[in-house]
Image (cartoon, rainbow, N blue to C red; front, side, top):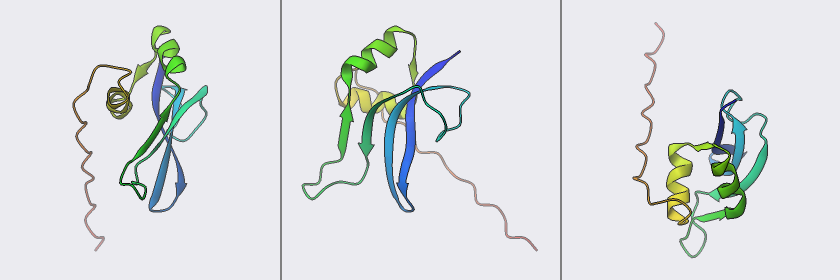
Length: 101
């Protein structure tokens, strides 16, 4: 079983909020998880800072157990100085479907 550290989206429409979770790689993005290890709010607060809360001891434990972070989570962990700094992941390009005739 491959275990990943990844983001689980919660929040409302057009206002994302993410939980950093430990989950089986085969589980859906917002599906079942093993443990919740942090949160990430991509909207800056009144002071202009995006909020990231991480349980660093649990991240280190799961990394020792062989869990692999996704590119976005690895970047966040690098910003929090838990992992070495990572390059910023490239955003995914979404293809627009042609209009039906």
